[in-house]
Amino acid sequence: MQGFRNGILALAVLATVGCGRRAEPAGSGLPRVVCTVGMVTDIARTVAGDRAEVAGLIGEGVDPHQYQPTRSDLVAINRADLVFHVGHHLEGRMGDMLRRAERPDRPVVAVAEAIDPARLLDDEDEPDAIDPHLWMDVELWTEVVRVIERTLAEFDPEGAEGFRSRADALIADMEELDAYVSRVIASIPEDRRVLVTAHDAFGYFGRAYGIEVIGIQGISTESEAGLDDINRLVGLLVERRVPAVFVETSVADKNVRALIEGARARGHQVRIGGELFSDAMGAPGTWRGTYLGMIDHNATVIARALGGEAPEGGFRGRLD
Image (tube, rainbow, N blue to C red; front, side, top):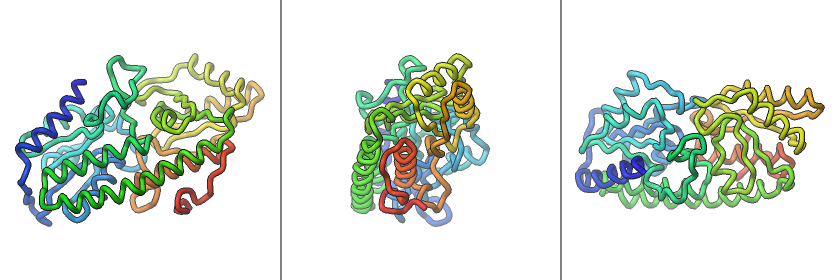
């Protein structure tokens, strides 16, 4: 709840201090907006359009839970006019830097902490903590689009109409994507709707789309899976004849491969169903390097690997 209150406070400060002010930094003359993870950066860049320079700090294949901020990150944040991050301890090691960066003329907004906590999942590994991976539920992530839109409009009232128009168009695309994900996951035979991944980043995905999710590690990759955890999951794979498990682009695959070896030793063949995007998106400049593309990739790969029906090209045929 403290993080939620901080997020609301940031928005309140923005409304009272930043309203009507348009920063004029050096260079292009546009406000500098700095974001942490790609899932926020992509939304902010889309909604901002040509009204701001939007930059991300944590790139492709990088785990935000364990990301060690650099001096260049500190410089970027200190030069920013507005900062967006997820919050709820996703950017664990950047937390102190982000808290220190906030000041009346530079709002630092935790976008997930502006969402009603009643709609969020608890972190089962940490008392009184929230699972921060809510971008995995496309419908829920549309609320973050609105948070970013409102924040930009309060910061730059002259651009409000454009922000709203771009946010509306993005949300329309997200609603279509949400329907696609629901459809392809529902096509998986019911007894095969088990998603086993390297860490527990897919809880919102499971709740939204009706698939059981099991992470080898906890919600934060700083947690460790012990031998008992591996043996328990191997037993589950064998008992339920799970055909595939999944690695993640931002998490080491050693635990997933241990599951495969353990199942093989018990006479059950399990394959890697594909590589999923969990805490980071794909390469910049690609479809998978966008929020829509990462979710499209994940849903399409999961459905096909577990026996469901999804086109090779995925949502709108953009997967290669």
